[in-house]
Length: 177
Image (cartoon, rainbow, N blue to C red):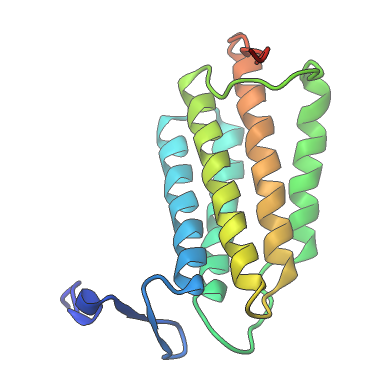
């Protein structure tokens, strides 16, 4: 089977269900950003030496693949993300929070290699969230997708902080100008 179809050479692609759209269609922007988030999470995992973090990120990757498929279709959709998965993310955040010193200022993204990659993943997640909002303004989509992505961004921030804390890498506080 060939990987190339030449169909996209003119800037078009096919959504699940057969609709042909421009490659800058809001669906493509949304699921493309989710795919990019999934890829950066794979990069985090490749450089990660924390087993429980790897498990957490792999679960998110599985969810993102399903979300991407839902965003890649027009019309009536089956809900792919449950409130239970959102609650799982919240529970994970709640477990990490007591371990960390409280924040009173913004921190600069960075620190250890894994933490830096987690911060990058967080920013990609926030972009995916914005793309889903843009799609949601034009078409009815599962609102739990937006909630899920919001929690993933929060969780990635907490994992970045936790990773630096456990590796004894100081966070750099932003003090303004």
